[in-house]
Structure formats: structure tokens, C-alpha cells
Length: 242
Image (cartoon, rainbow, N blue to C red):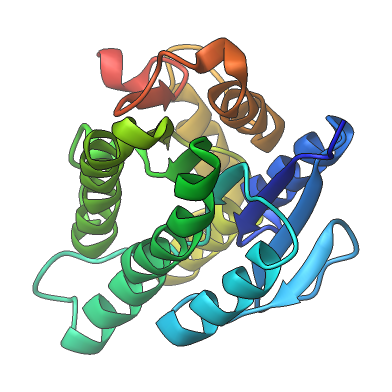
């Protein structure tokens, strides 16, 4: 059988790396589009904010392989309310979190349409469902990704292309630790105390792990999820159920 192909954006660390590892374990050929080099998968140096660069990289892949799965995972966190969010801050968050997803989806669609098959998974957030303090730009960007999953699902269902958004809660990743470190630096709080407080906020009493998100992403890409499209799949330890 022909080896299936998955493209992951931002696959060099955190949730993205776990996703790359999961698809490799399932015998996919995995291309990782990131600015940070990686030792797993087939690394493609790519600035996700540059639409032309994303288009060129993905078209090069599509020239040799049919693209079965796109996981649009690249993203950054930014903590601030609207008054403390500059125009440059807003542009940076949207360029990476939203425009990067737009570029990747647009680039893979011709290959998926030709094959009359494909799965697109966007990495949104529990913040697509609930608001959080000091999270204006990040919340806005993750809500946009949830919308993107719905509209893409409707527009391309006729080509048997499915699109879904995964909405993680608090997951223990390098991005999480960086956000906690920044908070502790500005507030003077103790990191271990903050970490325990974050865990206590989750009904299951702990933080999620990247591998758990990767399992959900793989399921959504598989034939077992072939009737799931346009959905927001929450994986948050029960946080948004409160």
C-alpha cells in the first residue's frame, strides 16, 4: 500500500512534536514545517507567516505525494488585555496563529481535491469556547481557527475533505512553561505554586499531556472519524464543562 502523507506545521516541539511522533508510529510519511529544526519526521524549514513560502513548500511536497492529512498546529501564546495589546502584538499573533493556518489549508486543498479525500485538523483552544482574562489576542485567534474549521468543512465536504478543530485546555508543553515563567517573572509568584494552582483548576486535577492531544488528532484524521467534520473537539480535563 502507498504510504500515507501528513503535513504538520510547528511540529518541532510540544504538541506538534507529539503529533509528528504519533503519525510516524502509524507509518505515515510526515513533513514538519517549522522554523526550528527537528530530528524527527522530514523537516522543512518554513516561516508559517509567509504565505508564499508556505505555498511553495507544500506545492513541492504535493508534486511528489498525495497529501492525506494536514495538522495546522503552529502557534504562539500572548498574554495581555486589549489595552496592553499593541497593533504589532495583534499582528504577530494573527500572522502565526491565523494566517499561517490559512496559508497551509489553502496550499493543501488542490492535492486533497484531486484525491477526493483529506483530513484537516486545526489546533484551536478551549478559548474558542470560553473567555479567559488577559488573553485578548490569543483568544481571538483561537476563535478564528474554530470558525475556519467550520467553514472549510462546509465548503469542501463535496470533495470528501473533512476539517475539525481540536480545542485543548491547559497542556504541559514548553509553551505552557514559558507562559508560567513569564507570569512568575512579572508577579514574583513561585512557579511550583502556580503549577499546582493550574492543575487544581482542572476538574480532573491535573494538566493535559501533549501525547493525549496527539491521540485525538490522529483519531480525527482516521477513517474511524469519517463522519466527523466541522466540529470543535474539546480536550481540557473538564474545564469548559464547569
